[in-house]
Image 1 (cartoon, rainbow, N blue to C red):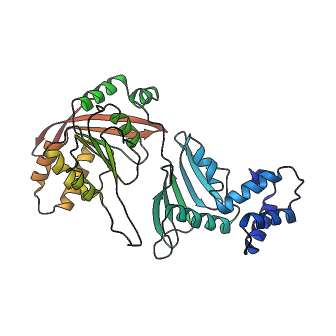
Image 2: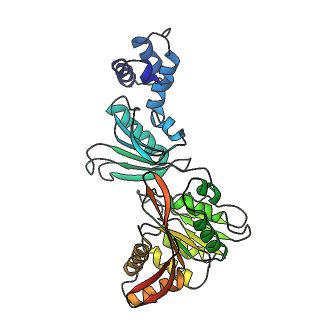
Image 3: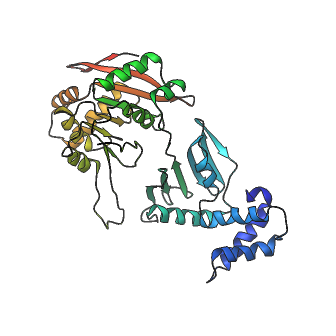
Length: 363
């Protein structure tokens, strides 16, 4: 856009003059006067320069086209002149930058207003979700050297298992096993590192659920997108200002049990909600699913046990393992290898021994 039309030094002067002369007049009028002062209105690309600089001062600036690019999944802004993107599974430095530190900090203020969040020295960490579902995390000094923003885009396309098969996320044999598990109402634990495709896979699994099955999804951000027929989605709430009460995953899980769910689906288990979930699965609600951060099936079960023991330290490890054994049937492990998301393990919990869980690895 405008950064390719005019020299950076001229752009700097336009932005500086616009911000210095801000008064009662609207920003757009100040910007027009500044451009006329440093860049002739008859010059090639005048309207493009106008739109580009205005977008940076009042909108999403250089981030806007990156959010629109369907091949970009992550945007990492380390400073005003250093923006990285993950495109088609590969991280790369992008040519886009902000004009200077001033416009970058202004952008962060505008972004936080959109998110209805606060970030300052007292609260240097903040996160929220844009209207399109993109997750945003803002980090400010002193916990980081420069103001930093991470955007994790929400994929609007609802991939089917056939779509993911074409993209080589799994083999035909693995697909058949997964379909069988879902249709037989097995309780499934999906695990993997960040960005490995856990949520994408979960969305595709939910496409297999019977239309009249009442699925209650519980998430921090609306990513699973299952709100059709009798199914409903519940979202947590967090207010850093303390103006309204926080609503946790645990609270939502307890209330979900009173909503006559056929299946319960939790976006990510990472805290005390693990205890509530495992208790619910042990007493029914077959065909439920959840994700957890782990690299192997054994690691996922150990992590689940650890989360439950933190929430219920009075419980004996043997009792926790027995409850997990009665609640979880299968584990799907996904990973991102050389930019390609793949299922690396499909395991059934076959028995509980004195040394731990015995798993049957199906591929």
